[in-house]
Length: 253
Image (cartoon, rainbow, N blue to C red; front, side):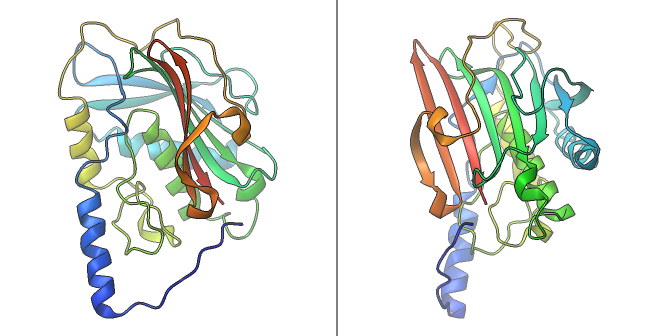
């Protein structure tokens, strides 16, 4: 389990934390990564490879993010084994399974070509942890599903300090997800910023993407470039050259 030292804080310190948290959310695009498309709004298919206990939370995330003015998500039937959660070109795939004592709650991976264009994405949530009393709650399930799906279309976190006051968005790390289960206005505004320009080609619904599959353990995710298990989050990159990468966001338990 992730352990963090909770420092004593004065009211003034809390005010500073609140201010820096608000400042941190000024831009939370994930490296400029985005799906190539020739028009807005655009529709992404989310393949449903989750079991019944997760359907409500996946449906909530799809409904929430579809309120964006530039993006619509639509759920389609899944395929393949949920534990391997092999990606499908041009789509997002959401999966849950007993991935084991890997110490992570959820991971989101995106495949990049040309340095910035997303060609496919996966979201995995780990039932080994979500079956425990700590995480087997509606709030935790909503936060993690909402956040991991958002990574798959290019959003990053607004804040990565677990002890800051909640920002009221699932893109904010927290020890108490009760008020961080859904997007907030800044998330929708950031999506407009990310997708304000159009591309000459589209990767949405594409049938081809370069082959590489990150597994369920950190050794397969590539190089750690940000965060750590002790910080509760991590960002890993496998760089295949020529602008081809697989990038994985991790929420540690």
